Image 1 (tube, rainbow, N blue to C red):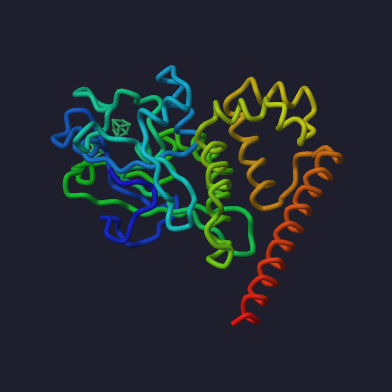
Image 2: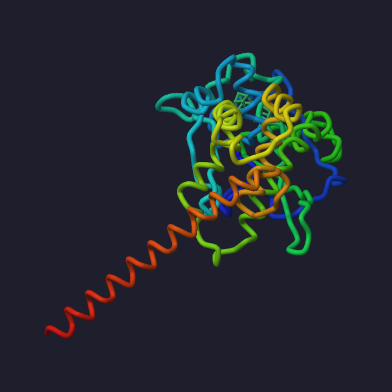
Length: 293
Ligand code: SF4
Ligand code: SF4
């Protein structure tokens, strides 16, 4: 089963489709390829997928990420992504059961979309993504010859994708924004990559961070908003997208304590002055060494 960003070598029909496109497809119990798609997986997870699965399995996001996922780089932009980890020494999904998906109600976005692939697009002059789709035809999947036609929009509704896409929108926008910022910005620092990973995927660790004294010394969150965010995983996840827009792209929407901002600016100024002093000292020593030659 492919992930949602098809690679050039993937069996994606090379045509961009919109939601009104009619496709022929049905997956049903009893079909002769039952579970073939889940036997060889490559499934990227959205933050909301992680949230649903860790809740389903009754574990923390930290534990879920360690046990059930592998990290990878989303494209070559240095943005962190996570994929489902297959069974040990195999390619099958760990949730696959003879009777079908063992986490069906909480199955990831890419599983819901299959055999449609979501392609998010973003025009340079707009900060909203528009969806476009492609069709994935793999020889092992016989759903394409089943006698049923429906539009991609109808298929998305049937698979419960409206809610899933809505809740992943903030994350997709961050990824698209990072990609479109281009190579001149360069690879993000280790710290910003770690921050992106924690905020997007490890919601329970992000909760501890938001509840910490250090966070609250810097950010001025009204008490009722803070309580609401800390009490609800979905609210917390969406707050995380806002937080990352502020930290990574300077789109301020969370108030900061003026004194803390000033103290931080002073620390940055001090650090810059120290770097300049050290560079000047190094140059002076190099000049002296050159005169001695
Ligand atoms: S999560 Fe379910 S649908 Fe997705 S690959 Fe695993 S078994 Fe298949
Ligand atoms: S029809 Fe396709 S999606 Fe359904 S079980 Fe077969 S391979 Fe999987």
